[in-house]
Length: 247
Image 1: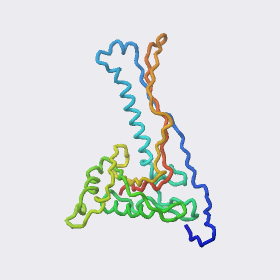
Image 2: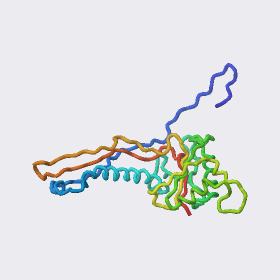
Image 3: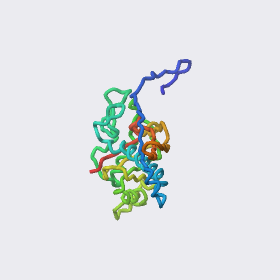
Image 4: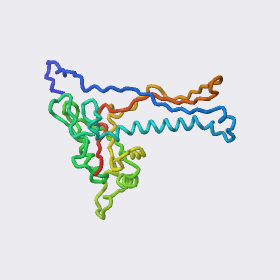
């Protein structure tokens, strides 16, 4: 905002369209066929468990597809609206030609107290599309693989410098970062900070999961059980994520 002199009009900013992100909803589904003979011989109610098993499989699909956004975060062949992967050192600013920003560590590093501090400092320097300073949300999440579970807990909860006899305070322990452990990260060294940006990571549901059954009483006499869900995943604002693939 500029200074408004007495009696003068307020300066009006020009609204321009930024990078356009398109989400394409995909239907995911899985089914099972139960024969008449299976029904006749089902002494232990195994068939009744099929809907639950299908629902679990679809839930794992959701986790796999959603986490693929992070698994592909450094893949230059999978880009967002600005033509860059989710984690890039060259995100262009739509409203400031020629200027770029980075949401990756300049030197890839495994998860340590020092590397986490460095990435948090970098996140604090994020700017908007016009290359102007912004206030990033305070509440953040640390996303890591199962291999970093105990390492992450030490970093987030130890009151003093981790793995050291020094009496330095571990400031990270006072940030109340939420720890998110996922079993679906393919790179066990990769880790990310999620910043809670309004239009960041997206999971859009077009149609909720449902279970349908169909009997072919005259032909095969089979019972078909099918579950489907339609959704899409991705990101709009890359500032929601900062990360590194690890050393």
